[in-house]
Every structure is written in C-alpha cells, then in structure tokens.
Length: 433
Image 1 (spheres, rainbow, N blue to C red):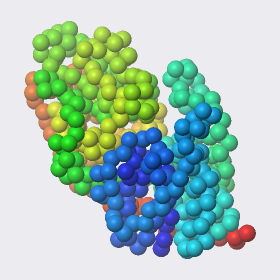
Image 2 (image 1 turned 90 degrees about the vertical axis):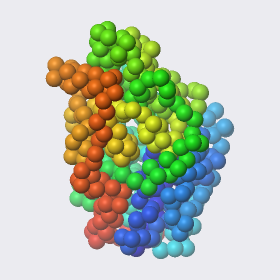
Image 3 (image 1 turned 120 degrees about the horizontal axis):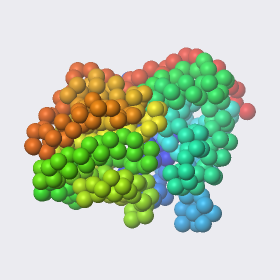
Image 4 (image 1 turned 45 degrees about the vertical axis):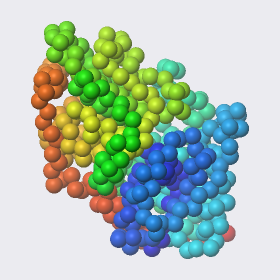
C-alpha cells in the first residue's frame, strides 16, 4: 500500500503539527505502507529550523518539496498563512504525482487546514480517498465570545475563511483521525455526510529516540534556566485560555511566599516558547497574570519559541515540570509525552474533560494531576504540599507504567494504518473525470 502525506511543515521546520508525521515515518513500512511526503521548502516558512529533526526521518522516505508565494509580499495583503501561500503549488505538484504514480490514499496531517480542500478535488479527479488528521479544531466558535485582545491575530478573516473552507474538505473525506474524540463527534454532527466514515481518536505518540539526540547535543543549546533557583519549567504555547490552569498554581505560590519568602523564593517558574509570532515580536500572555498576582519576580516568560531538541534538553535540566492546559475541554497537549519520558517530577492542570488527564494518570501515577476549575480546598492543599516539597529539595521522579507503551509512536502509527485499511475497505471509488 502507498500513502501520500500532505504536511506543509516538515523537518527541519520546527513546527508542532508535523510531529505526528515525523514520528510515524519510521514505522509505516513495518506495517505494510510506503509513504511519500509533500511539504513546503523550509525557506518559505518563517518558523525556525532544527536540523536535528532530520536525524529521525528514514533515508528511504521520498520527500517532495514545493514552493510558496513569498510571505514578504503576501503579508502586505494580509495573507501570511503558509497554507494559502502554498495552495497552488500543492495542487500542481500532487497532480503530477498522482498522474505518474499509483497511491492508495492521501493523508492530510497538518494544522494548515486550507490545503485539505484539495482532497475533494483529487478524489473527484483521480478517484483517490483521503483522510484528514484533526490536530486542532478547524472552524471553531471558541473565540466568538472572547474579547478582542484574547483572539488570535486576523481572527475576523480566519473565522470566515475557515467557516467557508471546512465543509468543502470535510463533506467528502473518507476517514478522520483526531487527537480528541469530541473533534470527531462535532464534525460528524455538523456534517451528516460523513457520519459513517471510519474515524479514530489517536493522540501524538511518545518517541523515545528524541531524548537521546537531545542529550547528545545538550552542550550546543543556550542555557535558559537559573543556576541559583529551583526551576519549574513549562515549554509550549501560552495564551489567555491557559490562565484558569495557571492561576491556581500561582495563587497558592503567592500564599507560600507570604509565609516564608526565604524558602519559597527559591522557586522560579519558566514559561518558554509561549508565542507563535516571529522571534522578538511575541506578546507575553503569562507574565501579565503573574504581575496581577504580584509574583512576577518568580516568573519568567520567554515568548520566543526554541527548537524541539532545545526543549527536550531544557526539560531534562529542570528540577520539576509544569504542564498547563487550555480551558477548552477538547484541548489535549501532545507535549505531555516528552514530559513523561523525561521522568521529572510533574505538576499538570487541565480541564477535567481533556484526554490528557486520563493519559497522565494511567501512564504516570506519581504525577500530580489537577483539573479546572481548581479552586477547591483539596486542590489548593495538594498544590501547596507539592510546591513545599520542591522548595525543600524533595523531588519524586515520575516513572511510567507498562500502560504508557500504548501511547508510543509505534503503537499509534499502527492505529493510523489500521484506519487507512478500514478506509480502503469501505471506500466507494469516484470515477476520474
């Protein structure tokens, strides 16, 4: 079987939405699938590059790199999206490939969702089924009732564009993969046309080889943590939607500081890589909360994103780790796997309906997991006890259970290809025009 993967971001681009593809590629062949990838040449993306990512891509994988419109010019028209800048080039390149080579399936794995509309065209023209990987919501009402300052840049345009494009791609899809079961439920409810298509909830996978690469190159990364403090580290996007998870921790920390500043002043919280904006242009979203609570002297926010392996090395250098989740119940954090693989002491706060809660509890019973709203006395006491232990130098490593194996990249790649096979079994070929 042969799958053509559409992934606008790909190594060496340092983008979260290519991680599923990157960590699945070493296993596709083992499960009977040959994979080729179509991506955008990294020179057309504003994202930083991390060439260490290429070490995990098998040499036999054929990668087709395409062009995109120059962001320097399209941004003047308000179009900085990589998906929109590369749409024509994906259309042309994949047309050539589908004319020359027989593929059984097209697989869109990206959050650059507008490219997915091409799936309906290729299905009609070439009779090839396609699967969409919903790593995030595409069209969403989440920000509709949020104040302007909490909405993403260019929200007015993106909201309307997504509302127009999503049905074009989804109504004709032959299979769905999503990191949240609610994503699938919502889409099948919204589009009755796809109610019966194969679908599965598949999170990102834990990929242990990455840790060895990070430790091998640790000396080449800029140190970000204090040598004079006990460092509690979070690496990942920020945002006002995470305040409900972060606030209770900082509120408890504030009370501890008032009780014993000498002891708890040793703790320093780091929030690193919180903005998707180009380096130097990110706006802090966590530090304002710390300032509101009066604990800004113990909180460091670095808006610039760091490379993936720099992230892994920094997690290893931390004394303890903190994962904050969104107040959106559908949010699941793919970043939990590197945290668990690091085996560092861990505090996590998520919406109670997030799939991350169950995954962490099953895989790492020693992790401290709390859910929002987290304003009850028991939660506050638990967080306070944990911060007290850390301040006194007591760190209980997180050991993963055998249950964690089912979240490995290999096992989750198997789930992907099982869904591919189900799609091929149930598909109804459309005659090429």
